[in-house]
Image 1 (cartoon, helix red, strand yellow):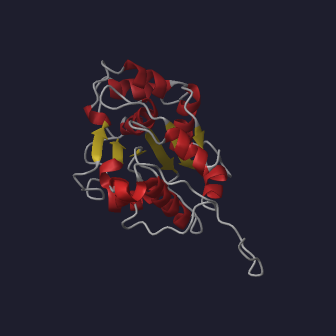
Image 2 (cartoon, rainbow, N blue to C red):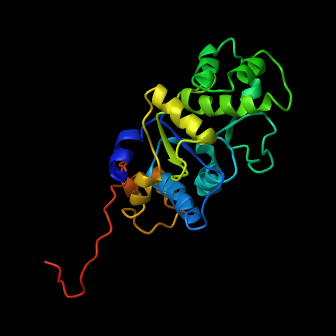
Image 3 (spheres, rainbow, N blue to C red):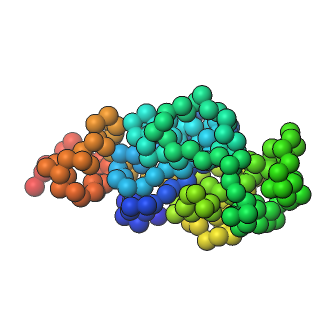
Length: 238
């Protein structure tokens, strides 16, 4: 899938795209995560962006989106005070797992336990036990909820990951990928979206997204991307 196809397929009213990845991000990749978030915010009109509020990839993906369009971001947290000072903006929509009514969302527990060795911790957390051991379950349930949604927020439509390609599909990121697979949610990792960055023109985020509101400039139509081309200086325009 190229970037234009992604935009044409997933930028529609009500669309939710999950942005998630490892806490450890290599130095050479950090700017790429920021650039992808910037590109998504710039070249889309409708989609919302869902994050788990973790340090590392989650934070980098959302950095530019929050700076300019925080109202398009959803934060799903394991508990209500999780990294609260990092994203204090009232414009961000926030949901906390410790406020979920599991009786109303039984599929959330089932989906979290599926193939997971921490199933007993998950059951204990769902039953109301809160301690330093069961808090791990809150993170796993959060990762599941980001995909499946709850009675309070809808299922994601697509997911974009930054994974550890040397140890793929491991840890919390791996758990979320497995939930995607079990529930038929399409996703990609950086082996795909790194290539997207080569097709996106140089972007200056400030002001560009505001053009969506100016019918005189865009006529209500989405920007169509054109890939970068290398034009030989000897070539003449026809």
